[in-house]
Length: 300
Ligand SMILES: [Zn+2]
Image 1: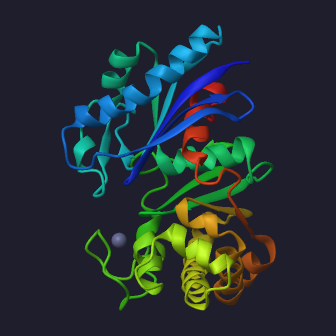
Image 2: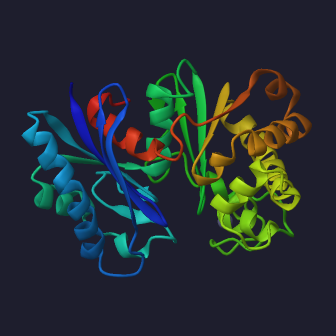
């Protein structure tokens, strides 16, 4: 079976793994992203984790086609460097593809994280069969990618733009971008945590499953804003399906049901009827599956 190495560099954690051609994750590890240090520190941490995985595949005579890299932020036209992300200053303008290729002695391909995530759902997950797929990932930030008739939408920063910064409440929380009430600021981990007395996302989801009222309400409120945001995005992309992934999606129906109810309240009647809202198939690992797909089953 063909394999690809995969790296998903996020604002908080970097996930690293080996993925098989059926989209299954063969090996995986998560390490903290070093946010403000030298870019080579980020590269060193990745190589230290991925090298043993590649060696193990080698020993078992499995062929690794290359290493796909999902990066939080916009990319340059050549897909050689990340050029815009307020949450990840260390990698700004750094020739990441070349640095990784030199250290790993394998071909590397870079993709915007929101594109990688939606590609994973489209190829192997909850997005299969969709003709107009919108994928959103909610965690430290909110990213979105769009696949129309099997092709990724690329019109700014090699992706569909910063969907998380549509403004849904002019009096809402201050966003990292400097604006107020962006969808991202209303639904990200920090917003959810604030609504639940400062607990972590993991704690909130765990408590909500046990019936903790404050945690359930915090997730419902977050879902309500998410549904409103998705309703606002729908006339632009006209999705037949929306897949919700990222750290917060671990809440499953506790987040999705309030999001669907809010969507049905706010969306144009056309979308209320036709657009399904579903959870990711990958429990937060969609980034590495999508990154590997750059070698295993690339999109147009
Ligand atoms: Zn913003």
